[in-house]
Image 1 (cartoon, protein in one colour):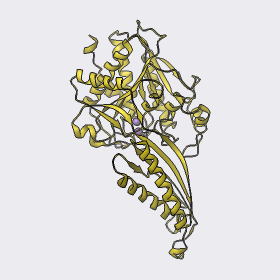
Image 2: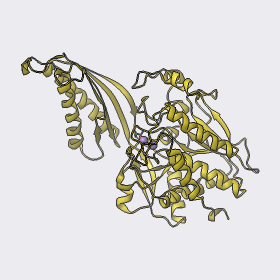
Image 3: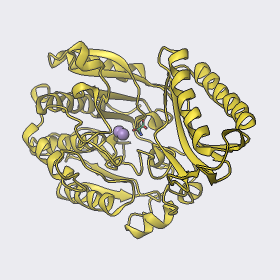
Image 4: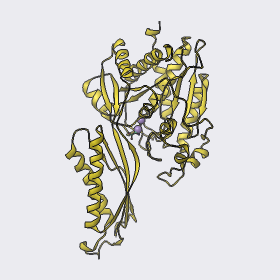
Length: 417
Ligand code: HGY
Ligand code: MN
Ligand code: MN
């Protein structure tokens, strides 16, 4: 009976659509819910209500992570839960699936078990973790990092956002500064369902990705101090042009990624110039650099090459360049027994599956520090994400959620230990 159990894909699709209306980007299917904004608060409240409707025991911890735990009649509540979940904060140009799918599929699994009166031995927990995107408050995966003890709650609460706001103040303001302790309780296992956000599964016409690792991430904020001057009267050799220096760094990041090749990627996503006026040589530039690689040594090498480039640029352009780390996570490998579990379950459901790495960061990479962890990927149309046009079909979502259902059931049915 359990093996033939399937989720209700219409119900899941409907919840994805309903949550996407919160912070909807007009004219698109996407949404914008930067961490701890009013839109994030509204999204949190909606998912919280759904957890309540499912009779879940809900806790909010000190960094605003929300964990709902469900137990059937035959569940031993003293056992550590099998956990799933993801995030519901988005980037400013967010799609409706990134993160949201993992949380809502977790609720769908619970509802399917409840309505079929199925009681796993272990409780099932579903979490949404604060500020996974890191776009407003860096680093990314912040809530799950604090949950697993990778950053102290105190230092996380003091993080300043890109808008100058203090994280702890924003958490209080939206009413999600909870009392549950950080680090949180260690689950028996953690499995996250997520869209791939890349082109691999679609190109290979594969339904499921059994994720075995997450690549290393290095974020830095680079500040360039030059000298504002008149755009018309200042001879080129007399300029201390922060705008030019920023452009040089952006070009270098692209050149570096192409030179290193392989899995190396590099992105300059944010540049703020001051005074940002047409006829003034910029006195200041504040920019971000996002470097990633599956290989830690190559990533370190890229970081040092960037630092060397900035040093030589500061000398040639007579500007001052400083760099502040925003995020630094080494590559992570997931638990082979769970990776095998994703593969086995996918095949038992008649789905094509391939083992693969993740180019994006995920909450699961934090849980891999404390318990057996893996991820399930479903395809992204045109490999697009962090874009309102992000799309995965209802059928692909259904496939992923059914793999999640069966895998969580297998993990929750066994006795612990
Ligand atoms: O940046 C990332 O990889 C994720 O979207 N937080
Ligand atoms: Mn995500
Ligand atoms: Mn994302």
